[in-house]
Image (cartoon, rainbow, N blue to C red; front, side, top):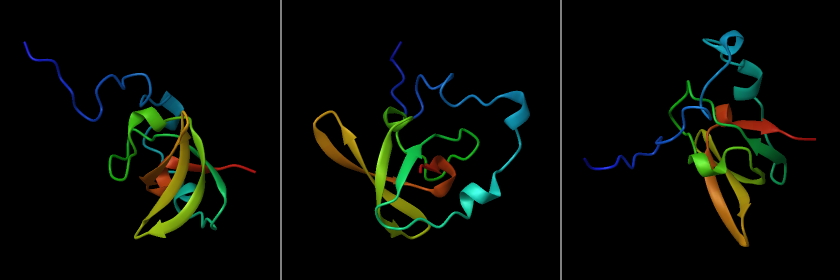
Length: 96
């Protein structure tokens, strides 16, 4: 049998929500307006599939570079490489 290699493979525990968080959309997180250079944490929301970055970036922190349509371009360090991640605001949390 061929092994599955989809975008959400092996994400059962990463994308799971607690019972109290189900069917709840945090409107303040979606409406938050970021500035260039703001630090954000990438926390995937399994209920929102659109604009979800790859699961390898879950829990990473980065800096906002610019806005791209509805989404934000985030600069993340992955090992020694600097990578850009395009994510919608449901998957971003501001850091102070």
